[in-house]
Image 1 (cartoon, rainbow, N blue to C red):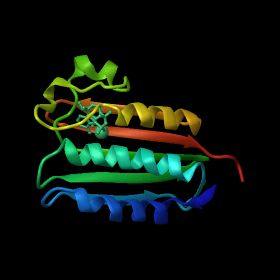
Image 2: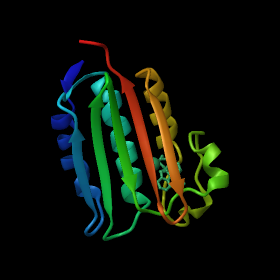
Image 3: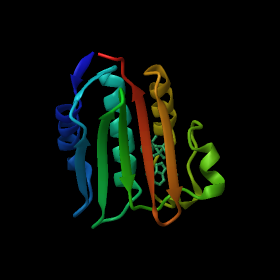
Image 4: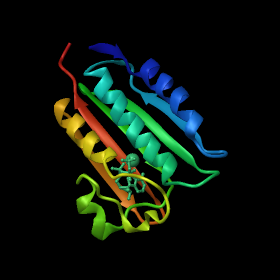
Length: 150
Ligand code: ATP
Ligand code: MG
């Protein structure tokens, strides 16, 4: 379907803000003159919720999470960046495997299925997902979706 990514993102933030920690703010910003995108809204919403929920869960109080969307050159890029615990470099290659949980998660609960689902949903949308992470610094995920020429 075709929808407005800004309105869509703001609605998701409102929903997920409820589970955020004390003073953990989600900052949303959109870049680009265009804001309409065409993709499966349910798949995309699920992906964003998983990424933002991870950002909340794997970072502490009094931190902020940056959520950005950008439309340019017929591409939509969705980025979620946190300043949390990060993913150890030697474990990063397993990130999208089902039930994978990094060793620095300690007592933080999880099943290790969220990112495996995100990875499969991104493939269904014919998009691409990349990440960058450093232990004790933070993590950034970016989903890129090609948009048809209008
Ligand atoms: P759930 O199935 O409830 O999402 P989960 O959060 O453990 O459980 P995934 O979302 O698939 O599972 O993430 C897999 C693992 O990747 C996590 O257990 C954690 O080790 C690491 N991880 C994912 N996102 C982050 C992040 N933003 N910061 C640090 N580690 C992360
Ligand atoms: Mg998760």
